[in-house]
Amino acid sequence: MIATFINVGTIILGTIIGLLLRKGLSEAARQLIFAATGVISLIIGFSLALGGQQPIALALSLIIGGLIGNALGIEAAIFRLGVWLGKRFGQADQADQAGRAGAAALTVDAGQSAPSVPRASFAYGFLNASVLFCVGAMALVGSFKAGAEGDYTLLITKSVMDGFIAIMFTGAMGIGVGFSALSVLVYQGGLTLLSTWLKPLVSAELLTELSAIGGALVIMIGLNLLELKKIKTGDFLPALPVMVGVVILFKYIPFI
Image (cartoon, rainbow, N blue to C red; front, side):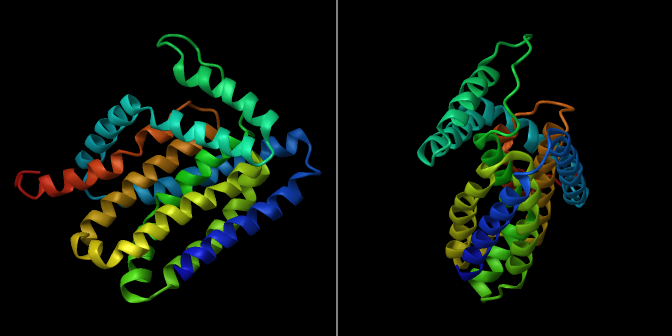
């Protein structure tokens, strides 16, 4: 767990630095940071997604996982958690504004144009940063290595990267980014603690395909930040466990 605590610390430190740098920024500068953050997200996402070896598995997992997530309302649930955290930790006015806009955007009927969620809202930063910091291959492989082998190298490297990304994300979206450290603590810490039992079940092939799914989710974040397309990224999180089932199933289908 030591490496996960370090990762949590670098995200918090990056958020603090981002908040300090953000104070004197003009609206034009913030828009520039949004654009840069969106492009960086796309670069990271494509680098992960293109590493996958099973495009059919990727497509099936995204479609099935997206349908499951939409039915369960996962993005709305994560967003409500972000709004609650915002209210709990002194961002009440901003959280209320984001909550009303977010509720409208997440419940709008098909065919209607959804009101946009404020991009600098607490909940928006919490949601996007949580997904970005948790879905990559470094979080998965690094957690297994830290827990089962005592090798912290990968997670320490990830911690440094996450710290710099947190600075940029905070400059664009605000303090909600820092609270994604809670998501990292639960997800990455849980994987580390369970790694001894999980590692024998996780093959290199599965990690590659899970990383590709993670890349697809990061691409969605980039598209949202650049306002090219509004995608409910959180609803696609079930694609990760769906991919596990698809990869196992494909072993018994010789012509795929």
